Length: 260
Length: 260
Image 1 (cartoon, rainbow over the protein chains, first blue to last red):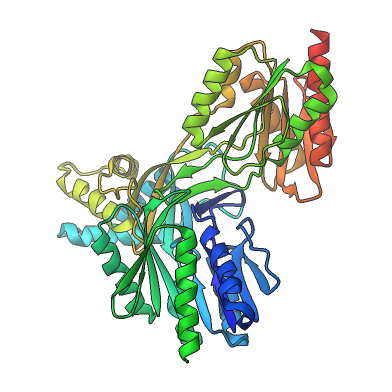
Image 2: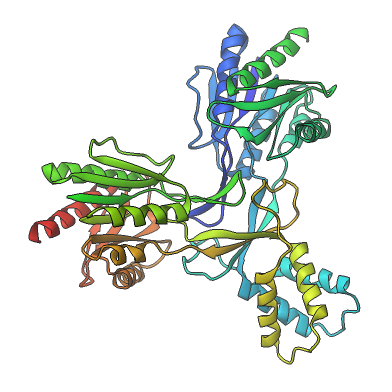
């Protein structure tokens, strides 16, 4: 049996010394890998483990570590692993950055650019809506950008970062290998339990997951971690700690594999 | 003798799960603390060590660790330490974030806000410059903001972050305790050596530093770290490794203390 686990967070560069990160530590991915070895006994041939440098990596003989940096590299690595290997289960616990830096500008530069565009635009705007659309276009086309391949100076006034969404890696997994057992993860913050379940279930349906683990960042601390493992029939099991989450996910997957 | 070392980087929150970090590891601050114990023999009473959780912390009996999170907390901790204790030397090697998140908006919301303001503005703009100023004001006053006390949804189109500069902590140190020996740090990226020296020297003069260590991120790797320790007469010593930087800084400071 081959398992693929993604763990920890991803990092997107603002410039060579500044980056956008998230609070993920990789502890849960770590525990899931250990549970596979514990519960899977001699069934587990390889655990492909995808994470960034700095993430906690479990010390297991069957572990094949693939270090990545950023969403794009993670996407390439996942594609390659899922193309080259027969994988039985993918546990995509990695907190992949939802946003990456598109461009960096300043308030002054952006205002100047919009102003210039408005001045050179001959016709009047009849409606607020048409003006809004024109300005939206200006903001997106703004070419008064700072070069973020170099370190941005420490003394820029009113820096602006324009972010763009990253590709959703969860959605590509079953397309690459339809037979995998897929576990997705959804983290929200400060929401009602039913809403969390609903959003987690939506993610499950959209990405053809076999399970989704839904959790709320306000219910995660050092010693407890409340989470709901949602099934395709929208039933769910509640867990209270990372250890129990890891145990529960692996148990469900091994049960499915045994029935196949 | 009491020493204050700041080390590693600082983290600014975008929302409860996303943050802006920098690439600093704290390895140099760590080595400097160890050098003080090695070279300082019995002279060192306390090393106050200010860093964020996750930074490498040296294991030394005289170390008093002060964990902080973000620029504001770092500022408060430094102020308290420099107010409550007689400190002989401050080595401010921490890569303090230059920017913190002021507000979060979207391109569409910002465009709508500017458009509305322009429509309700009665008089015409005679010059491009006056229009630029008006739009600059709009961008800063924009109230179509996302609530970044909660986790920002993963599905926002064209997210924009407006950043503001953080207070320069280096400038407050000699104001709080004028007698300290102060070592500042300047990191640039991909610049000529003379420019690096000039900028480092400017920082030294502006903040009344006794030394400034100037370095270029392109000349830092795992096994080498080229840096220039600049003195008030603008002469400088060049180092090739983190170990030699730490040794050189501590040697200079202990020499100054001996002469007092």
